[in-house]
Image (cartoon, rainbow, N blue to C red):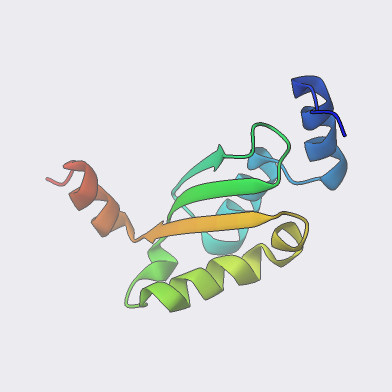
Length: 102
């Protein structure tokens, strides 16, 4: 078995339909996310993602409930990938974490 080239890896990602752009669009549409950063940790094959998601819908929810919201919004996408790691913040938590609160 040979290693895939970057071009081949990009084609695999496209064929699964799971791209950082698709994930971001779904999170903005489904969760009203105000900030989304998606990092493809799989080297471009679209099988392992880490995400930072900021949404007001996370308010008053514990980590597990936040992850359930995200996983529900991305049910089809998550089924098509190997690994998914969301990091969920409310807008207030995100501002505090980044030192941008007034």
